[in-house]
Every structure is written in C-alpha cells, then in structure tokens.
Image 1 (cartoon, rainbow, N blue to C red):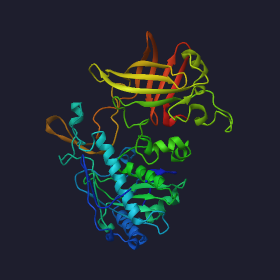
Image 2 (image 1 turned 135 degrees about the vertical axis):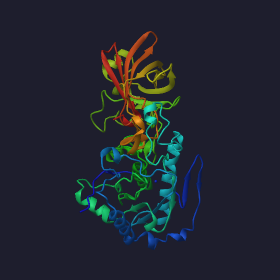
Image 3 (image 1 turned 120 degrees about the horizontal axis):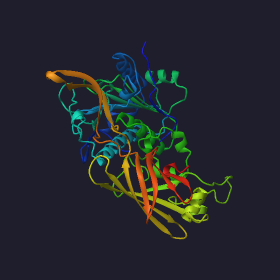
Image 4 (image 1 turned 180 degrees about the vertical axis):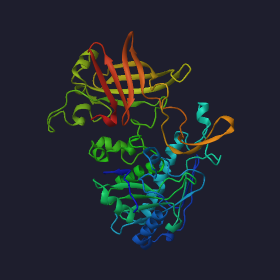
Length: 458
C-alpha cells in the first residue's frame, strides 16, 4: 500500500502572465506558444490529473514524502537540478476564480520571480559540487563526475504524460485526496513529489493550490510559497515561505501591502546585503489595552508612516536610559557595511540609527560584531542531500550521503559584539527568526532591549 506523508502545506496564503519556456540566465527569454494548445475543456479535465497521479505512483519505490525525500534532510532537496528543461502541465476546476490563460500566466511569472531572486544572489549559475572555501568539502562529487546546477528552465506541455511537474488549481486528484484523508488541518497549498531520484535528479511532482480565495494576489502568494519548496527553500527563510500563513494574513494592512505576493522585502531579505538599510522596531513595551483606544491606530500616532513605531512600545527603563520621549515615535534603521579584517570570524561593521519622528533627534551607533556559530558552522541554503563519492586512502572511493548547497559559505548569523555611541559601548547579539532580531543591553536601564524587522513588530 502506498504511503503519503505530509511535508509542505500552508494554512492560508496568496498573484502573472505566461506561456511556453522560461530560460533563466541573467536575462529571461520567454516564447509564447499558441494559446489554442490548452483550451478550457482540456484544462478542466480531472481525468488528466488522475492519469498523472497514477503514473507518478506507479514507480513509487518505497513511499511518498511531500518534498520527495526519505528523511528530513532529503525533504529539503531542490526538486530538479541539471540543464534539461522541466516540462509542466496544469489543470483547474470549473469554478476556479481564474481562467486557464490567467493561471498559466501566473505560473510563468511566479517561476520567473523565483529565478530572478536566485539570480540576484548569484545562485543560478553555481555548481552544487565544488567551490567551497574548505578543501575537504570540495572532495565531494556526484558519482557520475558531472557537476550540476539548479534547474531554471521550465517548458509548458499540454500532455501531462510528458510532464515532470503538474499544477492543480481547485482540483483534487488521487494524490491530494489521499493526503487530505490523513491531514489534521485542511491545507490551502501542497507540494508533493515522488521519492528523490539520486541518479536523474528530476522525478515527478504535484503542486496543488486550493480554491480558497478570489484574490489574485493571495493565489500568487500561495503559488510562490509552494514553488519555493520546489526550489528547495525552507520555511521562514523569506517572507513568502512563512510557515504560519494564517497569522500573516491577519496582520496589519500596511504589513500585507509590504509582503503580499512578494518573495522577500526590504525589511526581511534572504541574507544581509551591504549598504541595504533594514527597518527595525521594538517588540516589547506598553501597548493600548482596547482596540478603540486613541493610540491603537498607527496612523493616529505616527502620522501614517508605517516605518515609525510609538515610543510607548519601548520598555520604560530603555526609554529613560536613552532619554526618549514617551509621546514620540521612533524608527530604527540597521545598515550592514561589510567585513573588516581577515578570517572567518572577522568583524562585521554595522550602523544602527535611532530617529524620533516629531523631535527630529537622531543618534547613530557603530556596530562591530563577529560570527558566533562555533567551530563548524552549518552551511545552509537551497541544496541537495544525496549520494556522493568520497576519495579514501589507497585510491579507494566510498559512497556517502552529504548535503551540497548553492551557497558556499556559512550563514553570517548569529553575531555577537557591541554597538558604540561616543565612548559608551552596548553589548549586542544578532540572530534571525522570520527576519533579523537584535538584542541590545542598555547599562543605564540595566535591561536588554529586543527589536526585530518591521515584519515582526507584533
């Protein structure tokens, strides 16, 4: 009996143009086939979806896992690696709020957005094996000896028997129905793939988007989230990969505007970028007790500027320690300036600016922090855990399971160090949870002040 195991689902979420082949080099080339290739009568066919599911299940080889792996590490694998284009098809329910052409456009632009994201971080043309600063890691190679990259080419086909990837919108095939029998919560999106193929690295899979909303931006957000798993992105790595979509959709409207339908945001980027200001805000302090309290609405307190936060959200001892006015608003802006010195644990330079809205007072702290991950920091990011060959003494080869990643250096965070204002130094720690988190010790207040990216202000 075949098993279906939950991996990547989302409880709620969230908008394209498309047809044909997406080629992701620095510049994307889009070819537009004849739209008559996929009439509505074909796109609405549940039979074609079920045929795809049957073909997918026939070569099971040991069970299902939502992202295609037999272990937790394997489950985070990039679905498709190599240079061969991945063919995809899609089907939709008759009552789905978007027509076939709109859905195909949505798929195309969503793939293009992810490819542009990877390109912006220089990851589209990076080989998974080799390129590490540590020689021992460079000894890891694919058994075939052929190096591989993230697949960035996708081609539409009207024939699902020739497709590696099928998108279902509001329609349930046998795979989705089997999954829902065992689900404790009804999902609004699912990415499920067959057991990971350690030889061809291109097994078949399904991305399903439920008929949960009529909002095109919400549908796009949901599609981007599930495609993120296809590209090997983990939950909470960027805003669109937020594991708790229901809480996200219940956030304040200005936060939805900043994040809805986008992979990352200025206040929550995939990794720290040099000279890229990040807006932070306090996470503790006095807050209005009633929703009809005159200071409840940000617009009434901080002039409608969502980058400013009421000073009353700063802990009282910190307010007194820094001499900030309780009735004012503040903005915290962090800017990464780059590395100082040599070696893995060399200093990282930052500035942290505190600005009051009404008094116009500003103070700029200079930060010097070092990585504090230990002797063997983990290299994260999209990659594959797969069978590799390793050189052993006397010319022998041994097969092992290891992870190869597109990124070749450890994540910068966590960092520890100080921020200085004049002659006074403030101990600091910088970590990451759904964006950046900073803990700053204020001696005058004898207390720690914690603040996060603006996305996590509540």
